[in-house]
Image (cartoon, rainbow, N blue to C red):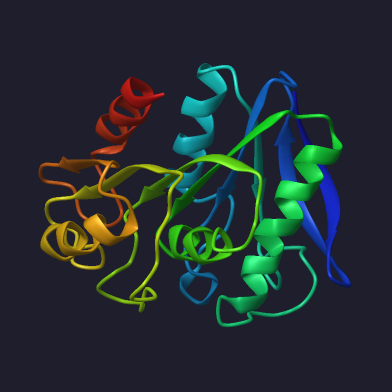
Length: 200
């Protein structure tokens, strides 16, 4: 059952939606850019949570600081990285043994950079990492990155640019391109869910 939860990131109370179905494995799911209306109720975020739930994961979606009822304000992606670390700690404290990260757009950027710290994350999935919109660190390596997904018409997460960066991130990661999809996956949500389900 999905329940609203509150946990601390530094001195800020953050809100989340937690669906605990198992202690074996769980996932923290992060949302698109707050300054452009992104929150944990985003359609793509909902789809990611749905697929993970079907694959028997406990799921935690959160609103970054300053979004919805989460305290604080937008922090240029820096404070948001601490929010991700706080969400991982929250899941661990509930007894979940194996934790994954999944992020869409800005959420993928935040997860990638938060993961540079020593965090107990098994696998990371990035949906439309915004390489055409935000700078990724040039030496960003992600040993736990397992899957990257984008659309063939995504100008914010362009296929060619992701292909150039993937060998640095993790040459072993799978890269899936959904033909016809743009950054918002309108009309292609089922295709995205199929790709995620097949991977998981």
